[in-house]
Amino acid sequence: MPDRKPHDNLREEFNRWAEVGRGEEMESHHLPIVLPVIEKMYLAPTDNVLDVGCGTGWLARRLAALVPEGRVVGMDVSDEMVRRARGAAADLENLLFIAGGVEEIPWEANFFTRAISVESAYYWPDPAAGLREIFRVLREGGSAWVAINYYRDNAHCHQWGELLGVPAHLLAAEDWAALFREAGFANVEHERILDNSPTPETYRGKWFRDAAQMRAFKREGALLVHGRKPEPG
Image 1 (tube, rainbow, N blue to C red):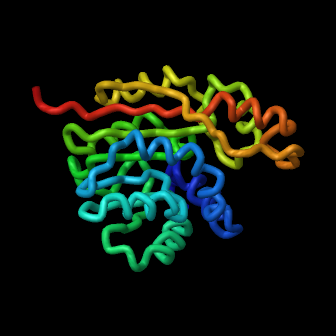
Image 2 (image 1 turned 120 degrees about the horizontal axis):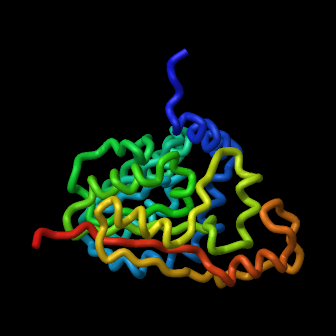
């Protein structure tokens, strides 16, 4: 049997997610924190954007509409997610999807002007390697934007680690910022993106103890870390 790569378990897990329809659920779950991030990115019509961990492509399709003269590339470790994303975007000429892991992005260097990852980075087997690869494929002056809900500074998500089907990195905001800087990014900052969506009176899911904890989690907000690839001089 050939040696398994670090992202093989991720591929298998997220293929299962795709098969039960969880990829399509991500838009409603994550849109409240994603819309403010898109505004902060200040996209131009000619931008080339990489969506790392694109799932079934809901965010990539939104981005493609905002960069009609550019290109959006959605990448996911799950080939089943990519298959579904391609099927939902067959009529969008400036959007394509590729299967791959962030530790070895199958794209040329210095191409993208923006890169975004939503609720993906804590799954990366080697976050430092992933950020180095994103840095490589960005043009000078390009920026990377990583948004996550699972991070150490928000105590109301720590229980997720025992519930996820694959290992995940529980890092603090400053840990993520340090990884950005070590990868070569400048102007690195982190902030909270609040989730103002309604919370049900009664919570029966598995991710939170009850509705009160869910509300407390949302008050802390998602973590957004971003940085820029320096230009010469």
